Length: 99
Image (cartoon, rainbow, N blue to C red; front, side, top):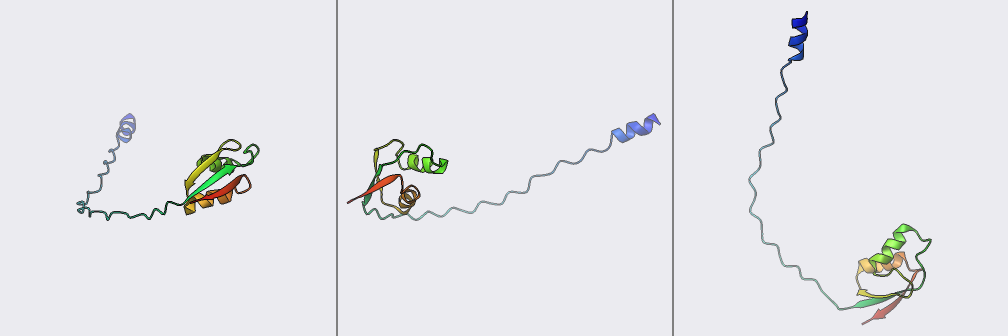
């Protein structure tokens, strides 16, 4: 009986899985140069209300705009992303258009 237990304990080991074969890398194409239109338009934002007691997302948005204390001013590029951030905290900031 002890021989039977010993043979069960020495069951054949599972074979190691082989890594899938690597495919030949296709030659990379040269990326076309990105031409971004920089209109030079900027927007100046002033924080007019405190971030104390606000939602964490609003605090992080203020920091993303470069504001974190009352009456701080930050001049940023006028992009859709910046406008969206300003919209999220519009009750805490005052926007001054700049050329």
